[in-house]
Image (tube, rainbow, N blue to C red; front, side, top):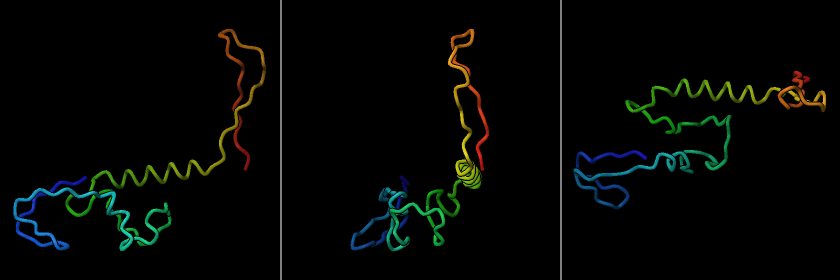
Length: 108
């Protein structure tokens, strides 16, 4: 949610907003605007027209947004690689009572 105060009288979509009026904006709702996004409720990682407001905009843009984008790219790339397989090697337990495990790399 984003809170702002109107600095001057304004009329917006048939409603008068006097100067000094407090307003709340739902940014998540803006990202689902059918006028701005084709099929806005579908997750499309390759969406070309993507002027979303997830990280804010202008002077209020999140300074951490490049790091968040990089982290998401790394996470998606890592999740697309084969997972490491774990298998029970020996049903007998070790001295601490744990079964023996072996990790092997995934096959490509």
